[in-house]
Length: 202
Image 1 (cartoon, rainbow, N blue to C red):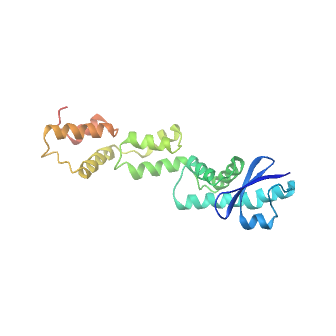
Image 2 (image 1 turned 120 degrees about the vertical axis):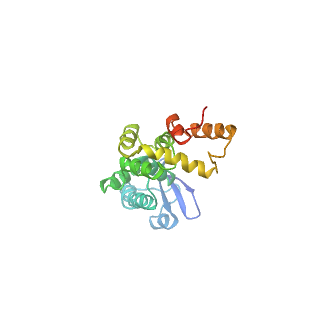
Image 3 (image 1 turned 90 degrees about the horizontal axis):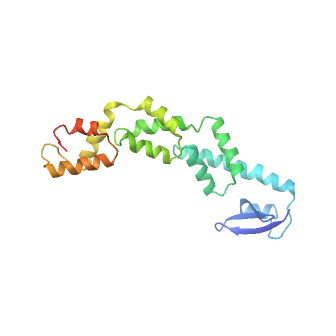
């Protein structure tokens, strides 16, 4: 095997290409330790040693750190690992590793997300955000059914009205139409809006 390229990522980190293919990212000290230089030879044994003992270990620790730092979906975790220049097979093993400890669970993530946001966002907004975060629709539907409370959407409407300093008792018809349109665009149901603004006739 031949080292066909070494490209700087930062002053201390470098992409290593083997046989014209991106292989992994190593630190400057690791390049020196393993005597890796451009146009140099690399044995299959060394290649596998670096992948398993350095890169995979690093990816697993990075995955754990990312999940400790904040709650993430599986898709979000994979995206963050890709940003660290880990190859797909290494990412797969790192994700399997954290899954084996129950550290990543999209269903649980969806439930926690719904509970924490349903007092400030519409169900449609929450649904769309969970889709963007990579949670599949079946898991979102199940979490919605389990966690959504009927009065929370109306609570969210009141929260948004307070943030916009909207007072339904003093607002004129134009102001009411504006807030109604705003709430509709945010995804709140007609029924929920009418329950909070019962006198509005739009």
